[in-house]
Length: 266
Image (cartoon, rainbow, N blue to C red; front, side, top):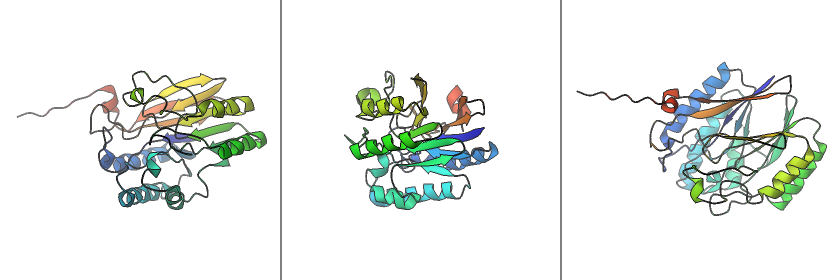
């Protein structure tokens, strides 16, 4: 069995909308403690590590987040998100996170991970795209892959039903990759991809397309409709020896998810 943990949209920084970024560090520390206890083999950090404010603040917040991951002792894959390059440049992210490129591949366990850069470029400050150059790279990597492939990205590379999403129902198309049809068609035709994992949409979404598990992980710090006490949602996925994918979604503050309110009065 190979176990990975998914975390996305950490959004460290000041409060923006319903994302209390000041809670991010505590939630991240707790997440990493849980990963150690659960014997996680690999962490997938799916992007949007900062609540963008300005270049100086964003770099400081990214450096803090990166230091927490690097000191955890657990191998971590980082993905570029749209908020990560709102004020920072990609080269800032690559330098701080210790990456050679914004899209890359690596072999872990009996799996090949293809890490996409769906901010290539960002459109309308939010939506994603995959450049033609990266698409050619994706084709090449899929052709030579000799083990089951997991595709990781910030934006979904497949269609999602967005009715009820408090953010993206008002932003048609910006929840995913603009050229998703082209990208996902390549993924499907390869016959090698077993899962597509992403963040960005801030809610849990699971579907199966052509035998491919497509999973969106909620934001760690999304507290909608509140502005405090984010539940800290993350995912644990087991790739079993029986070729099963077993995904669970857990919360650092479970009472926030199932419903609990305490009012102390005098």
